[in-house]
Figure (cartoon, rainbow, N blue to C red):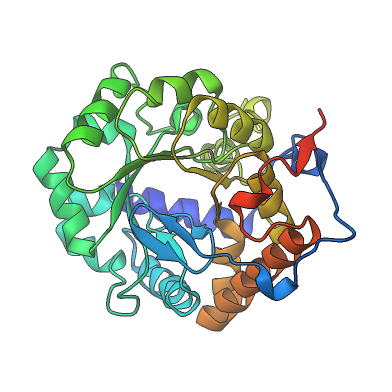
Length: 334
């Protein structure tokens, strides 16, 4: 199946079906914050501004890359980007494989006309690093005005995908190469099944600049691929992966750069629990897409503003003036 048709199926299933983890959670509910009844700060003292890969964000929040390569993606990406521009936060686009295959699809990713100032991440799958030259990847980023490249690692998804490419031998070498040679910063992101200490330790030996854990407990890509292909063993791997909270802790121990907490982040309180465990920013995907489908730019902006307001309140309640100050003001009980 062509990449374009596959992306359309992914979008349809994500919006129409229950693709959340069934039994496994993010474990963020196991994080107990250290409530400070006398915070000794004012709510107005809380400062959410965060620098990420050379860009200043008004809040430590990125809308994770989801769509691109299909006509429907054009409005989705522009609506999300316009909201992010208004709020001063970051955004990623979906996998750019489709536009690498067909440059005519570039417009489905392009958002700089409505969001000239946001942090914008391009996106390519780790197995595609073997297929495309450094120049082709540079051109793909330049075409959309990206500030960085997110390389997604998705072994669980590829194994479930009927037309997938579960060929990951040598991928670490290609990550090392692209992180050293690309003119833009490179970071790694999972797609909803988490990153372990061992993998983060190996990644720390490369020149990647950040890790987006995208842990288990939110949207399950094994579920999406199972529903798409009607595989009988879909239920077996539906809940596969490392819970988001655990992945944050493991990655923080192994990697010194920025950590993005994502995978089932559904509130500003979830976000602050991520900061307590060692994350620097948070990422949100599917709820933003659903907000866009319901009410366009306004829906996205209202939803994300709610997350930001909740972040500020949660930080105030633990006496933290900044997301960085939240580190250690609580613990994970497993």
